[in-house]
Length: 103
Image 1 (cartoon, helix red, strand yellow):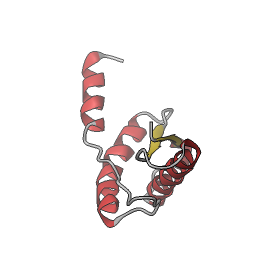
Image 2 (spheres, rainbow, N blue to C red):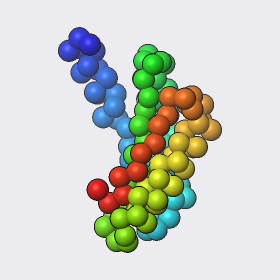
Image 3 (cartoon, rainbow, N blue to C red):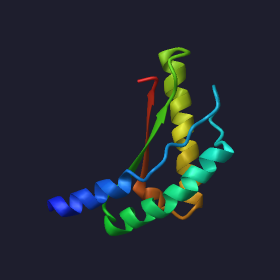
């Protein structure tokens, strides 16, 4: 990938906002909904230009709770975002999820 293309792609990715969750919850908050709606146009454009690529949605938590619990919560959060993005027209096959728990 040429350096100029890589820079443009990185500039677009830098526009993405995090979707934050309430403590011990995996329900998308109203402020996260706004952030994700803003992200949809950026994501749609990138994935249209790179149809063979996937967007990896990362689920994170804070340090409270066991590692196993936090991995599960991070997974539920990532899947909630995946479902939201799919409902907004982002192709499901181009979305992948991973949970990092508190890491």
